[in-house]
Amino acid sequence: MSLISVVVTLIVVGVLLWLVNTYIPMDGKIKKILNIVVVICVVIWLLYAFGIISRAGDIRVPQV
Image 1 (cartoon, rainbow, N blue to C red):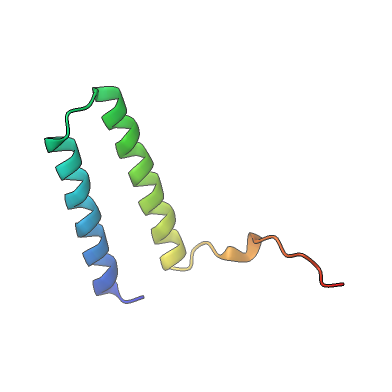
Image 2: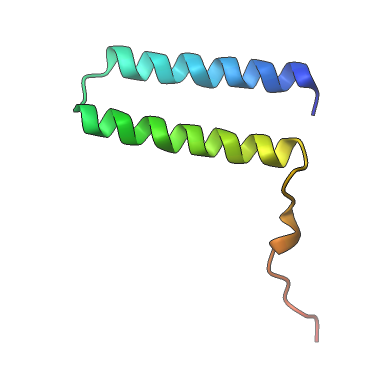
């Protein structure tokens, strides 16, 4: 994955989150939870994208 695509994705996610926070009326607690969930998902995605964590923990079923 190229650095440009990572930057573009981060910009798009940031703009979408800003639009949701600005134009959709919600309780403050729900906005805070939404922001936390989006940030956690983006951080995990970045860790996968840069190879810091891998999918080595996938469950594999042995073939019989």
